[in-house]
Image 1 (tube, each protein chain N blue to C red):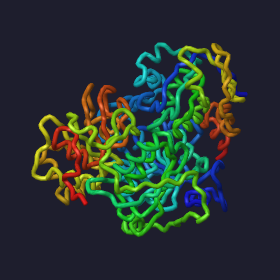
Image 2: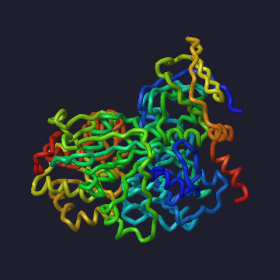
Image 3: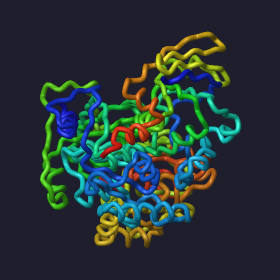
Image 4: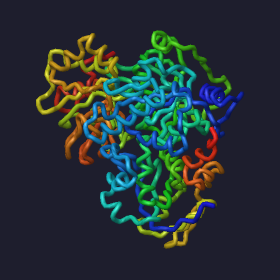
Length: 419
Length: 167
């Protein structure tokens, strides 16, 4: 069995499971965000009165943080009331940050768990050896009502990363390169596992970016076998015991791919599809109205630190707005303590409350018709960050910061040591 | 038993994402009727004006990719989409559709064999798709027994309500 199968078997109370089977699994943690008032309605539609295991449910108010319309405020109000009535203590209100980062910061994510959230990028938690997957409101309501959910046991695609990452190249560039090569539907219904020697040089933040973006290949979940880097990171955060699983040596993946990252250049995903990827040099010189640093892909302390490194003592280009959204309160505090925020504000950046902000076109940094934006987020669909006539280029935090400074798309590599 | 669907086809391409099916700026809306007003707005702003109850959607691969937003299914269901046929579906969209009782069929070849405005008849139980204009029949992947059970129940909420009535 694969480690993911062992996780699902444990959660299903079975000795073994295999790909293609439908299994009912106990869910260790289910997260609801403030887009999904429907979750509460569906819970009552299912005859729900008391939430099954309120200690395994968390509400994170991150998309409308803080509320910008009366309707948003009303939706959040009903969620707070629901948590209060149901004894759900894991309510993280506005200002806490993006759900995926908050759950990690709060020590709620650990190897071997089954984590389900009303957000497609729940694949992020494969970075910790968890089975994390996104669902809609009704599936989440099923968990609140019954404590469990059905899953089809997925096949696994294994991607081995070899070589040495060049200066100025980040996990975001590696995963964009892979998505560009394989396509947006390559991994539908499957798990994408990353392995190989490159992982030893990837921080937890970079691993999260890698796993987060597998959603853009259609993946159901992702997986990285926990190692010293994982355990060092989790040691201070996770207060409970957990079981770790490893794949059997005879497990057969549906595909085994390998990439030598040594040759990968900084990449960009061009409008309007995430798999529309090419080296950044192809787009150099395109004028920018906005540069956006944030989200569950590219808004962590390390990402903000990269931007501060590039912008220290300099000014964002006059024609370009630079919007920075720390992924969580913890990220915000760390970035303050390290002086990154000071550097960025002096350089002309606009800092927004931790949360989703304009990542999905709801508020705080929305694009007008015809505007062009470079973003460290994970999607560039038409209308994603505002008007459908705007253009979004996805790149690494370094590409975003260097381009904010130049007022046009530029290669960030000159800001880093090139080996 | 789940029924036969017959309707005009509205055809879309590959990777039709949830931001086009239901733009993010409307996510704060909560009533199905309000949600239904914005169906497909990002791909075809006139969609709700042209579409009639029972018509179907035919598309390329990876239909519904992107967000987990269930409103992307709700907006189509509110417009009484008869069925969606696609070469493949994004995973979360597929689950959401089944959960809300909207029949979705993985139908290889459909994006090449059906054009805008064709009348299509679908036998949901058998997964048989017939283009009435060309007379051509396509075999979609049959739905699993559990999925048929959910659709026959009118979605997963009524099913769970029944199964957990005394819990």
